[in-house]
Length: 517
Ligand SMILES: [Zn+2]
View 1 (cartoon, rainbow, N blue to C red):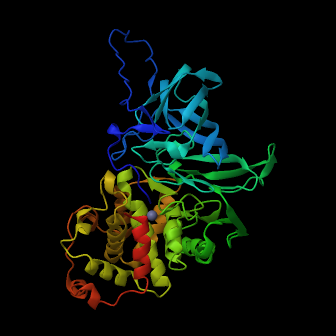
View 2 (cartoon, rainbow, N blue to C red):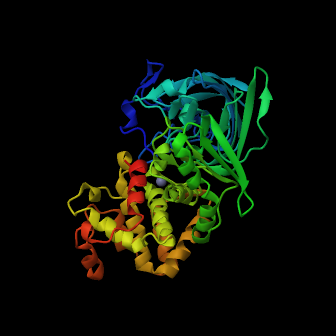
View 3 (cartoon, protein in one colour):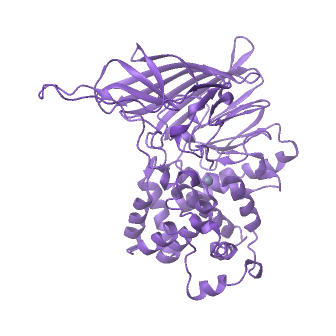
């Protein structure tokens, strides 16, 4: 839940250690077809430099599909120097003369199927690679990229998705974070598995997604190499790296899966609240499984980041990362519920285009309302009423339609709160029986894949036998505060000070203030 680049990408400038590198606009892919004999096989063409996302058109790349990333790194916390090799296993989806990866750090060499390849920087985050030999559709590709850089000083419009801390760093960001630590096809449409191994000085911990295929191994030079493996397909923004001083707590969940929780040793007096929250992850995953369907991944856990790290939290696959702000007023299970609900809604069922962000944030926020109901701290209806009454009709809150908020507002508060209200209206329209059938049907139908708002509406209509067009249009796509009628209108007509405040309200407010912006 964090956005980054507020402006359109076209005008951005990348700087590395304070030096402007390039701002060159997109690639010149024009290829003239005239004069070519009509019966000759089509010549291979460049893969597209983007996947055409309606909000971030140059995110991801066309022409190939990644199956696996092998990310093998060396990191120096003292200098923030990151170097290594990423090996990408992919398959060409067209005849290719060249193709792009998304990446920002300095590239030393690229090989494609063993052959040395020439490459060039294009746009802000494009690494254009010339095929050393023609690539035909369906061909397997092994792409080896060697690189090095200082990720925290590699900035786009002044911003780095890599957070340097006193004891290490964090690669945790949405919608883009891979740019700063491994080359990728950076869009949720191209899911892959990944292995991450990082060599650090002895005494430093490295945490990432999934399971540990082997314990940390000692290396020459008083170093240690940590290994992590994601065995389920994931979107690139769901991958993460946390390097620093962590207490790592391992356990087994009730469903038999490994639980790995990590707590920054910098948390000090915040540590007990962090532990009292994150240690309930397995319980919350089990609760979520009864509502959303089977848990979609191979491991569970959470990372309590350091005090000088991120100010938000992110649903990084199998193991969300939390900023310290969530523990300042004591334990907070709501943010644990939010990020773990994202394992179904965001990590397993990912957006097919970033304009469908409501499928992530609306659902994770509604999960908090369901948890509040479960805990006896306010029902979803009470939270709906209180939210509605809190924002007067002329409040800007109602001017962001959660179904298509715009690239600059994908993490606006309305995507969360009005997004949850929209789901509650859908629940009221179809009834509880249908609503709690629809949620697991949705996660099963798009498991480890992608979804759109339109697909969700179609599934909800099919499962309920109702036309839901009015509800979706009103609550997701129309600016302004929707009118309520009957009892609901009467309940919410009073000022919020006259409504009973749900017990969970203050906690939810505080969490969403950190998650949205
Ligand atoms: Zn979220």
